[in-house]
Length: 204
Image (cartoon, rainbow, N blue to C red; front, side):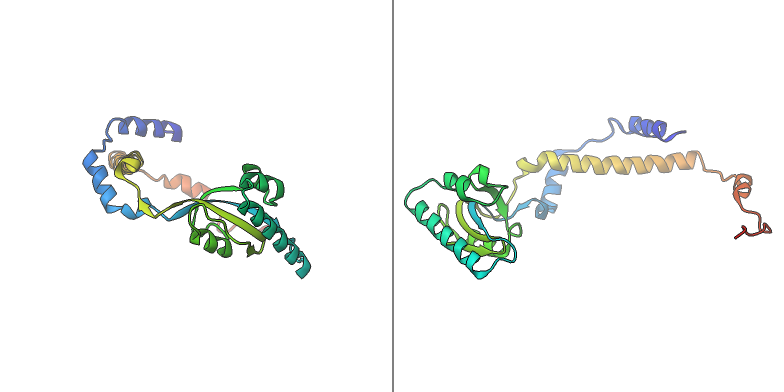
């Protein structure tokens, strides 16, 4: 029996046998709440004034001065997104107005992360120095850590439980088939594959 045919037969045997109740889903949710924790996160945007690797002190001072000038423009009401598109050296976010989306701790370099999570919503940072250069950061929204509701993860849990049950049924079916159709080893065929013990070693 080839592998494809065997898989088709297994699939037919398992179809319709797997069912997951709401009670099972609720029990799984209660027993695995740690899996559904959403960590604290912030939505921020930034403007990066990049300093090349190995740059001298003057280059760092110039970048800091430019960052301070941009901070003043923002305080005077200029649009953050437009300034980011014009001045930011971060190619991944500048065309989105500096938008970084939501991120949790551990996603950004420590200096950036520390400031971003300390700011209030709508607050601008002073120039923040990292190994990339100087950043101006604005936090737009903050989300406290929370646990997803059962309704949010119900479909995910159902899929997990059904996959587990299908695997258990498949394993049980394979064991039944093994018992019904025992595997026999043909020693004659194995012996044919054995090398001759007295055979001369290969020439060097």
